[in-house]
Image (tube, rainbow, N blue to C red; front, side, top):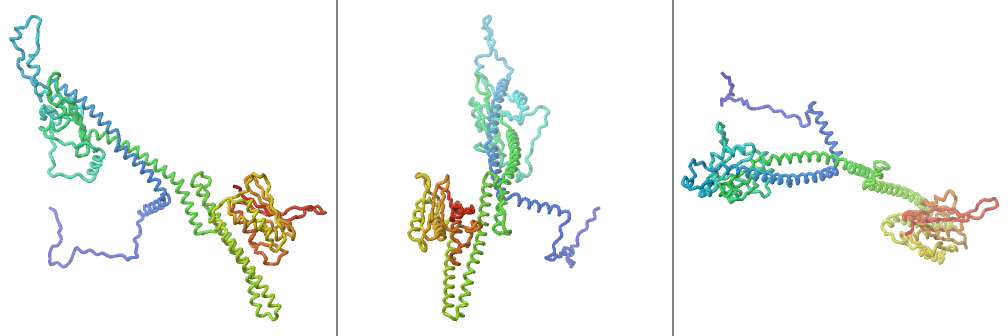
Length: 606
C-alpha cells in the first residue's frame, strides 16, 4: 500500500503554500567564484590573451584565405569527383554482363514441361534407313512462356550471393518474379509493417538527405516504384522487350543512387520471352562513394592542419614584425621616451626589411628635424635677444639723455639694432622655409658652366662696397658637361654667398678665383680668396648657425647664417661643402703661410 501525501486543497485555507521567499542581494555584492572554477577562468583569460596577441587581423586573413582555397578545392573534389561516374559505369557494365548470364540461364529453363509426345508416329514410319528428325518443324517457331516455378530456383541461386535486385517481366511488361519475394521452403518470411503513426525524420537526417541529394542529383531522374503491371514504365525494360540491352541511372527520394539494367530473355532463332531487370540496392554505390569521400575528408583534415601551421608560420614572419613596427611608430608618435628605436629588420631581403629600413630612416630624419628645429629655435631666441636687449636699453635711456650728442648716439644704436633685427629676421625666414621649398620644387638639370658665368659677370659689374674682381675657369676636356640635378636658384644662392663672403675678406684690388672641374661622377667648385684665412679651430664652426668671426667689421654687421644656409642647400642636393686654408709661401722660419681661404663644393653630376 502506497502512502501518497497530497497537498491541502481546502479553499478555506488562508495559508498560501506556493509562496517562496526570495531575497535580493545588494547591487554591489558580487558572489565569489568557486574555487573549482578558478583554473577554468584563468585558462579562458589566458586563451583570450594569446588569441589577441597571436591571431591578429593579418594572421586571421592569411589563415582564412589559405583555408578558403583549400576548402574550395576539397568541395570541388567531393562534388566533381570522377570516381562516382567511373564507379557507376563499372557497376552498369557489371550488371549487364551479369544480366546476360542470368538471362541465358533463364532462357534455357524457362519453357513449360508439357509431358506430351512431340514426335509424329506416322512420320517415323515414313523414314528411310539412316534418316532421323528432331522436333517437328511446326514446333520450332513456338514461344513458350516463362515458367516461374522452374526459373525461381535458378534466379535465387544466381542472385543470392549479390546485393542485386532482380525482376523478370513477360512480353507485356507484367512482373513475373521479384528477387525480394523469393524464398525457399522452410524460410521465415518477415514483412516490415508500416508504423501506426508516421514519424518525420529529424533535422540531422533531413540535412544529411539534403546534402546527399545535392551532391548526387545533378540531372539524374527520380526513381519510383511502379506496380507489377507497369513494367513498360521503366525505359530500360521497354528497350529490352524490343531486343536491346539498356541501362539507367536514377536517384531515389533519400538521395541514393540506383543503377538498373535490363536485358531480353530469348533463345537463338526464337522470339523474346520477357525481360530481366537488375538494379542495385539504394545504398550500394553510396557506401563506396561515401567511403571515398571520407578518405578525401581525412586527407583534407591533415591538409587543413598543415595549412594552418604553415599559415601561422607565414603570418608570424609578416604580422609579428609589422605589429612591432606599428607599435614602435605609435610610440614615436606619442614620444614616450626621448628617442624611440625602430626595430631593425633590414637583414631581411624582402618588403618587411625595406619597410623597416624606410621607417628607421624616416624616424632618424624626423628626430634630426625635431632636434634641428629645437636648436634653431634656441639659437634664434638667443640671437634675437641681444639686439632686443640693446634696443630696449637704448629706448629706455633715450628720455634720460641731456645732450644732443647723447641722443644722436642712442639713435644710431637704435637704428643699428633695427637693421640687425631686420637682417636676422630675413635670414631666419629664408632658412626656415628652405627645406619646405626644396621639397616642393621639382629637381631639374642645372648647367653649372652657365650659372657660374652669369654670377661672375654680375659680381664684376656690381662690386657693391668693395673693389674685388672675380675670375672663373673651367678645367677638363671641351666635351665635358658641367650639369647637376637640383634647383638653380638655390645653387645660385650658394655661389653668391661664397662670392660675397670671399669678397668681404679680400683686400681692395684683390681677386676671387673660381675653378670648376669635372671629376668621375661629381662636379667640383673651388672658391679661393686672398684674405687672412680661417683659424684652424673654426674650419667646422664657420658652418654653424649665427657663427661669425669678422674682427675687421663692426659688431652685428653679419647674421652668421649665410654659410649655414649654403651647407643646408648643398646637403639637400646630396653634395658636400667644406672649408680649408690655401697654403702660400714659407716664411724665414720655414713655416707655411696662409694665402687665403678656400671653400670646396662637390655635387653629384648627371
